[in-house]
Image (cartoon, rainbow over all chains, first blue to last red; front, side):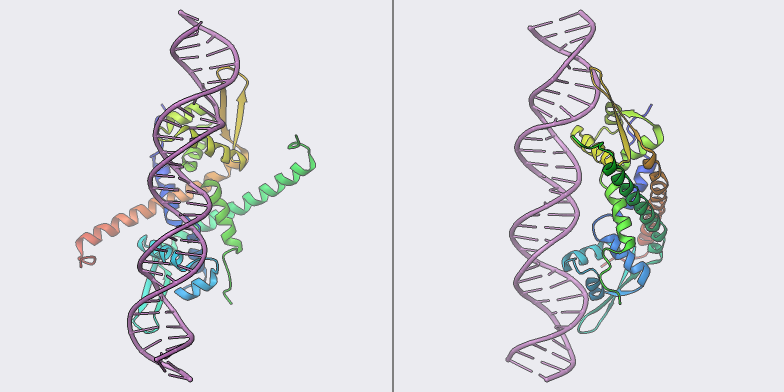
Length: 125
Length: 125
DNA sequence: GTACTTAGTACGCTTTACCATACTAGACGG
DNA sequence: CCGTCTAGTATGGTAAAGCGTACTAAGTAC
């Protein structure tokens, strides 16, 4: 019993999710598009000032490839490209909200642990 | 309006979660300990045959540092070390289940899209 | 003709994640 | 004295993720 479990049912699901929303920028991009609706490339860039253009492009391409967002190109000069959440992408919002909720629960938990650590001398040599 | 959003409330929560459960092996380890209870180091290694010892050690240390699991050392020779989910770590199970559920929803969605793609000539040059 | 606009691409670099292999301690069985 | 057991550590490598800077196209405004 308890043989190789690394490609079990549960694991594949979690891994698939991590592949779609994992990485440094994807949650941010998804958050913006989910909560603020359609955005142009330049708007996203200004809303995430620390991302480089190259990264923003690549992350948007991956999200589009995975069917989370839709890229609409207007044939104009200067160029205009809009990004928005697809119908399938909408289904992510509950997962992201749950992750956000747990994340805050975790942060609070850490904080209270740190305070305890300061009161006791548990971690002193 | 719509200024820098990259360290907003929601994003920090999601990022914190990803830092705890992200990576190639952590979801697997958590899955095992959540669903099968306490395990020894060697048991985990045998249940995840493709992980290297070094990786298993480092991932377990990080999960312990983040308070998800507890490491119990028996002062015996040969060594005996047990790992099990902490009380705080238990709270992860709903998040992992949700992620798993969405992952499968996503996989099914991809499958049906692929089938559609084979019927139409949408992606032909 | 020069500068400005937007949505990118191209290049090379650094940093992080992950992997493979070899090694250790200390008791026990033979 | 030799090999076996467990739970690691150490070292050095590859692969992937991410970063910084420079460049492009094509039209408009000056």
